[in-house]
Image (cartoon, rainbow, N blue to C red; front, top):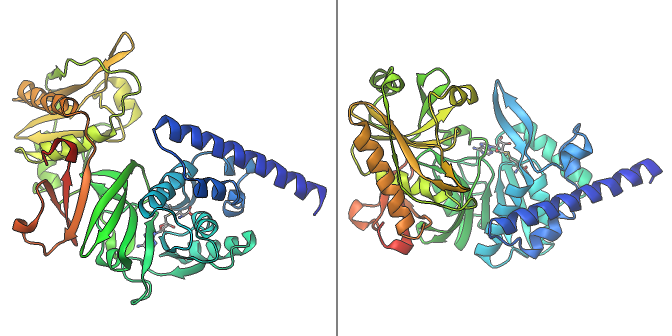
Length: 421
Ligand SMILES: C[S@@+](CC[C@H](N)C(=O)[O-])C[C@H]1O[C@@H](n2cnc3c(N)ncnc32)[C@H](O)[C@@H]1O
């Protein structure tokens, strides 16, 4: 090895260990523990091999590295290390360890497959599948370069089984899915685990789901974002413009067509704004990720449409909207009245939760939304749980909860600690 190669390898190891230390600290701040087997793999696999052409320092940033685009949209990336660590942690916790397991990874790149190969060891196996031949060619070359010769790389649409009779202990999906095709469940062993970034109500969470006969039951969830699934399982989100740089995202089988919604909301933000506040005083580190799914579950049961509000930075700066998060705030449209979860209101380093509304019933709509926020806090800020059943399941056989119908599945969302469904 030349002196240059040796010093680059030393520098890479230094950066890798610093990155893992950062991710462990980030896990601790979120109340998570990184399993030892995941930590060991992350301190071993050279991420720079899977990000060719990217400077060493960048290869060890805690962010995704985009590798393929179609127009403006990213279609493939080497996923963000903290997210990979969280998803591997979800898999390890749900299965009680991954050593010796047979794993199918959906969405290739090589980096995550190498981590999995390190973790499952020689007694296990890793198969990785991607729809894009450019990605599988690159993954094959990078895996070889990094010395992971036992990983099987397949180029196909993972909507369908990779090998009809093959079963895996773990199927881990690394692209954003809207539904769970039957093949993902059917390729699992009888108590195998599926880890999947799944969109429900327009919001993506990485869910660890354990198989139980023909359905899946959640074990854990984490907040995340991913490039979307392509191929037969692709599901386009639709957008309705409501002002310059302000959009509504429609993700489920919304009954009202986008052009009708568009007419309904034309000029809505120019109508006077009404606001309502929960009247609470929460400390800075309060985690609100589960509140938005709670709101979705509650608001979809009421009249009107549940939608997601997104806004460009300039639109927020101009004050036309003030959403809780500009990349996706829960919102409703009901007979010409539009309401959404607003930005937090800070007083003396504590914050309150609020809702803004425009339209004929604005005051009532904002008030209803904050009632649901108060109810979530009063219930002890419960976390959501999912059950995923085949689309053919009769309604009478569904557990209590909020039902979301997709193409292949009926998804039931509950908040178990409050026994309220
Ligand atoms: C975020 S990247 C995967 C990252 C990778 N796991 C890593 O180690 O960093 C998502 C990948 O999913 C792939 N993908 C999207 N839809 C797919 C499908 N239906 N079947 C297989 N692969 C798919 C994309 O081509 C893309 O390469």
